[in-house]
Amino acid sequence: MTPVFKQPATPKQAVRRKARLDTLLDPELFKALADPTRGKLLACLVKCSRPCSVTEIAQCCDLDFSMVARHLTTLARSGVLTARKEGRTVWYEAPSDLAARFRAIADAIDELAPADCCEEGDCCG
Image 1: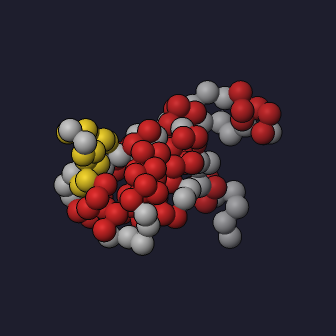
Image 2: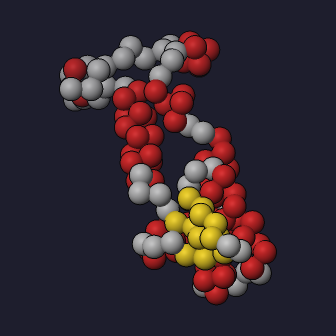
C-alpha cells in the first residue's frame, strides 16, 4: 500500500518537503527530451532495438550528419541514450532501464498525488 502523505497547504511548504521526486526530476533529462528532433531520434533508436551508428541514424532523417551527432550527444549526456565508441564510429542505443526510469518518475508523482476525496465521501454526491 502506498503511504498517504499530508498535502502541504502552500507552495512554500511544498518546496521544503523532501520527496523521491526531487532526485528523479533531472533538468538535463527534460531539456534533452524537449526538442522534437531529439524525441524522433530517441523513438527511432527505441524502435530499432539495437545499437545504431550516427551514419545509420542520419540516413533516417532529413538532418545533416553533424546535427544528428550533436542531438545524439545531448541525449547521451542526459542519460537517455548510451554511447559506445569503436574506432571512429559511435554507437548509440536506448539503455535497458529507460522505461524503468520514466516509470520511477511516474510512481514518485503518484506517491504525492492527493488521496481521492470520493473515497472519504466528503465531496461526491
